[in-house]
Amino acid sequence: MTEHSNTWGRLRNEIVHCTRCPRLVRYRRKVAREKKRQYMNWNYWGAPLPGFGEILAELVIVGLAPAAHGGNRTGRMFTGDGSASFLMQAMHRAGFANQPKSDHRGDGLMLTNAFMTAAVRCPPPRNKPSKKELMNCSAYLDRELALLSRARVILMLGHIAFKGCLHHLRRKGLDVSGLVFKHGEIYRLPKSSLVLIVSYHPSRQNTQTGRLTHEMMDRTLQDVRIVLERDERESREIVNC
Image (cartoon, rainbow, N blue to C red; front, side, top):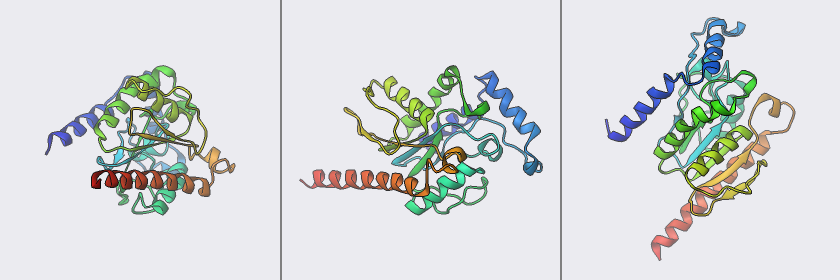
């Protein structure tokens, strides 16, 4: 095992055993214990979630937090709920996933050139983490992004993910003043090779009301492709000069 793999392993272990936020610990354990009627036969994960995907990925997708009966049940980011289904269908259409479903950890899902993570690693009550809880989790996002050395695009799903990523970039000393949350916005940062792309979160509240449609999600992932392909083409041109 390489040192890089060891580092990922240590980080994953630290995240899974984290108890920094008493309110979130109580809530995730309560959900895992009481369960949802349709999942009574499930052995809930009931622990914080590390990121999932290719560690050499150029695309990093940042969400809010694991769903109480999705990731908190299945033990994998964006797995086992409506948001996961909506997002994975779009990722499969865009070529970032080998299949259009994300049901459980053994379903065969593999991401291509993509890594999924979240601003918060436990499900917060009413999907509203406190400022302190966001700050407690921020070190994990910092460390994952530092290890994702080939990352070129960060796709931020929802306002909380957007804020979490901006806080991360400020901690790195980057100027993110003037950046606002607006679906479809694409931001190139001065003094950074990262490109930020903003999207509504694929929550049922957004997808069932039409605030976020399949077509909108497809266009967003097409924008990701365009950025990656253009940057790759420009890099080849510079090398060939």
